[in-house]
Image (cartoon, rainbow, N blue to C red; front, side, top):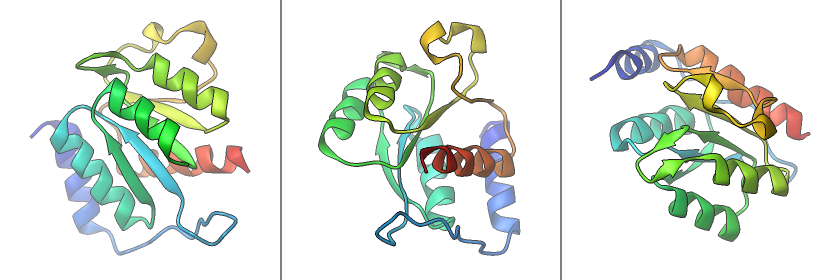
Length: 144
C-alpha cells in the first residue's frame, strides 16, 4: 500500500463522522465522478467520499468516464491525469463543455496539463485527506 493510501486510510479511521452538509438544489447529496484507473485507490476514494456524504460514480478508463458523463448528471469530478488508456484531458474537455467543475488528482507533473486546463486546480499525490475534501468542496462552491 503506498503512502497516499496509508495516509487516507489512517485519516479516515481516526476521524469522527463529519458528513458533508453540502446538498444539491433538490436536497440530494452531490454526485461526484471519480476517474481513477487504480482499483484500490478508486475504491478508497469512493469510501472516503461516501463517508463524507457524497454519491460517487467510479470510472476506470477514458471510455467509462466519457460514457458516464454522457449518460448521467454530476455535480463535480475528480480526475487522475494518467490512466492506463491515455491522458484524461478528453474527459476534462467534456466536463468543461458541460459546466461540471473538476480538479486533477495525480502524481504526474502539473506541466503535462494543456493550456486549456491551466486554471483547473491540481492536487498532487501524495496528499492529505483534508486537502482532498477542501478541493472537492471548492469545486462544488465554484459551480454554485
